[in-house]
Image 1 (cartoon, rainbow, N blue to C red):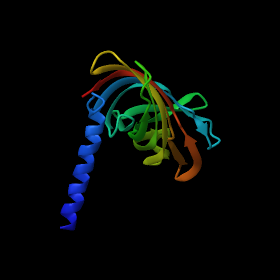
Image 2 (image 1 turned 135 degrees about the horizontal axis):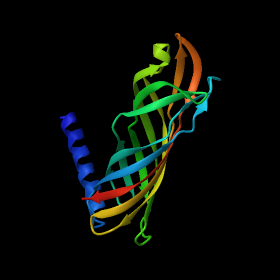
Image 3 (image 1 turned 135 degrees about the vertical axis):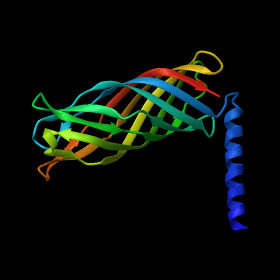
Length: 199
């Protein structure tokens, strides 16, 4: 009986928040596709002179509006291959998958412009490490914060143009011949532009 009461309360809360979001005349869901430039901070704590390349990547996010102002956003991409440099020379590659989950505040009452800010958590999975012919390795994953600021500019009832900037904290310990050499902080700045569809 207690479980049924809890389930009923959760469903009622979801219905109320969806109704509040729809009261603004917009659906509670938004999907965006962006082209995002990944600019690595490359703060090398190993003393080896390591750095990782910058690149432009595809990004898709799904947002759910609990109210006209409050939304949650899940940011997704595909595994990205990165090159590691030592003193400017390539020493190998790795792949990373860096989804983020953010809680956002959307400002309303500003006419055609709809700015927002967000904060949340990033989880990055690191795989396919091939550095120094197998002598060097990275940690398998990284947890860190994520900060965001952006703006949607409506094009019609459903479509909007989106500009988005995120700071994501990604770091990994670097091992050479099994010995921990210190931490490489990638901490990329992500600058993106794309389209959103709300329904």
